[in-house]
Length: 132
Image (tube, rainbow, N blue to C red; front, side):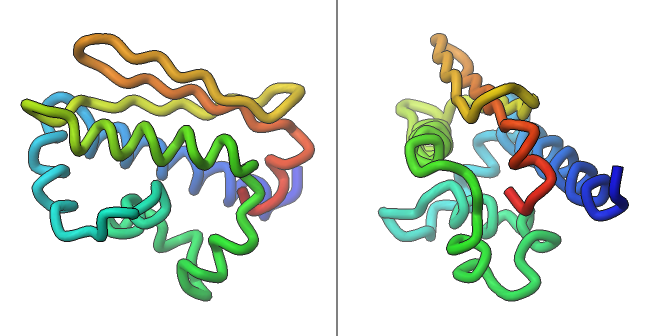
């Protein structure tokens, strides 16, 4: 495997670990408080960027990263819905758990219970060697 792919894969694993930690049952309330000042239309990229998790992915800024991101738009909407539901849930924020797996096609599987939002993203192998 090319060295760049390994670096991106490692960065992606770190990103997921950071998200799952910040949105865990133990930390979700503090995370929601930190994100209170975000604009009403903030998407998953705005949210993860505000938490400082996108720094390795955005050397040329968030706007440039947003334009080149390979995640399909319908999956971006699932991500945004999941993040926003987690931080805005009433009466208390709801924990969120994300997993990224490799599969044959791009997909998202969203499961919501009374106490957890679980989102599994399937990224196709041909896209995993690129930035997304």
